[in-house]
Length: 220
Image (cartoon, rainbow, N blue to C red; front, side, top):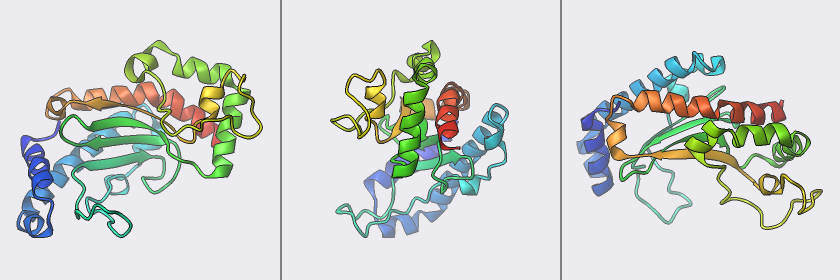
């Protein structure tokens, strides 16, 4: 669980997203950051028992900076209003299939994973693996536990037409059109400070693990 003081900090940051306020409340930020990092360490410890690739990760290699890069954005607010971590094999900077947790207020907390916008060679490998082994892929994403937690994959980033080399009548065409292979679930604000938060995150990642394994196998 996260401490109420962390939630208070995020709420205040959302209202006062300016450097003078942040500098004046640097101590509150450091306390909230330490609290979030403690949660990520617990996730690594507990989920690492299920996925050994996660067990050796260091928290510092997973947690993203709160400072925004505003150089190419119309939004010039200097700080993110959430804490986030990429729990991937090799750490957040390695672009491989993995897990993600994002703590944000107003019920925008997100727990999920997969791989977002892989480069063209990797994208082709994933599509090929889905095409060649659609029965295996389908058994993973149509599994009752997977459907209960996630419903389906996120298809907002999908192509409108079949990618080159595939036909519209391909049984897997819905997934072959995807450019990102991700799924996740939202948590309520109340869940962030509940004693069951860690258990729910670990359960979510555990249900997702066969999907992550499939994507990883495609890229090996």
